[in-house]
Image 1: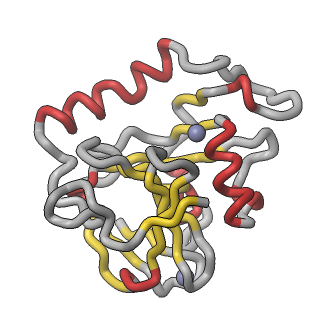
Image 2: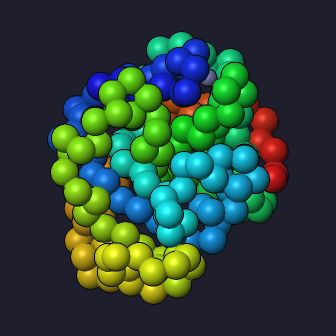
Length: 185
Ligand SMILES: [Zn+2]
Ligand SMILES: [Zn+2]
């Protein structure tokens, strides 16, 4: 499985997909919205302000090309590391040190094959509905609900147990220093 930026200069390979994935998730929180707005990529939000990600394990990602195009931003000093590309301003993924989670943004999967996500089935869980706009035709819990926990907990527990946060291509060998300088947005 390959993911890429809009222009294709940045490419990465994901192994064990979709077996080792938490599936399609959508977050409506104000940070995710703020980030895509600051990036000038509101076009990637759904009509209600949601950001769709399909999380995979850090050790399952290998960069193939365009690593030099990557940039890393945070919304605050301690915020998530949010990665995008300099070549074509595409968000790629959000990551946290020592956490078995690379939240790859949906568009990185669909640039080559727009149908790709449909093949994965519907969105499994939506969270942080308190920040959603308009009147979504589906239910979003204010924060989280049991369905959200059931959707991601097995993925996180397995990842922690098997140390799948190790060998992340986004961090230096210490596992916590991003491979490029971080800019706070
Ligand atoms: Zn690009
Ligand atoms: Zn969010």
